[in-house]
Length: 368
Image 1 (spheres, rainbow, N blue to C red):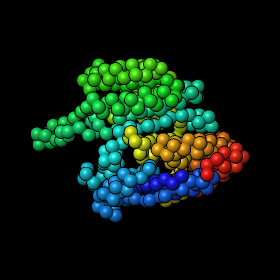
Image 2 (image 1 turned 90 degrees about the vertical axis):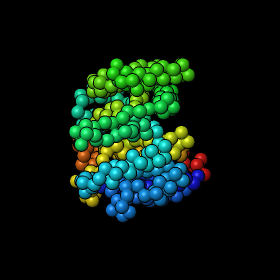
Image 3 (image 1 turned 180 degrees about the vertical axis):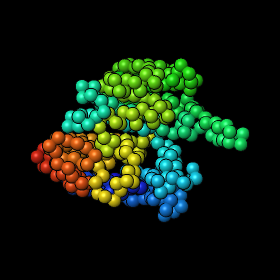
Image 4 (image 1 turned 45 degrees about the horizontal axis):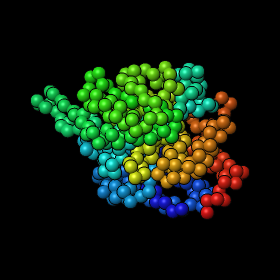
């Protein structure tokens, strides 16, 4: 099977962890007899330095023509003094909007070997296994007007949603719940915001189309508290852009390291951008010690959701879990009696587990 994948290494450690993703994809190519056509493009600070804009037109065009996109990271102090329209992060917002990637998916699952590293007690975090479905192209981040007024003494931001925008993300939440544990938590602020009251109305309307899914409504402040007191009580969370941004970052620390978690930004036809949730970590860029697991797990997410390769995705996830159980870890993790590795070493350990499993299970022979 031939698939075109655009690679956006970006800034900071993005280039290093993208090399890990490329090695994993090469292993999948070999073991499962696929053909991945890779095209590398610029975004963020890298694009600013090379082309003067955070998102070149050629990058957007290449992504539109691809089957899937892998993104490393964007941003760093080097560009902190740029005008708002020329910040690296603007490239990320523009590509999401330009490609119509309206749904952000963030799986959050605890790793048994890393429970001790979580800021929460092990008995609280051990059953964490949720998917956060966040609306990505509407709401407060994109509403107009958005400006300073009265000589800079007043400011206005606008939270705006259409019915269609809410309906499609709510449907994605229900679909995600159907293939998981059939429990959907809709998060809003319906006691204050008119947009949230409309959101809640639409969730209740759509619930009739998914009678097998249990639905509950939570105000965003209550949801934030539940995330740190009973995270195992969530299956799928669906919410609007601002709330999803905050809650998904809160949930990401449950596992004990930001370096572990993937994310996907997708649209209806399956095209998506896949990236780890951590930042560009400029303080360790170039040192060869970055944790590539979030990037590798994002690669697995891409294979499953955009390329329909569920067996391959599962093989990568299993290889990562096996690596952690074997005690291998990067410097941001702390596994008792484990072996600390650099970026390249842990990538090779994961690939060794991946190829060994493929051979022992004899599952690759059917993919010809």
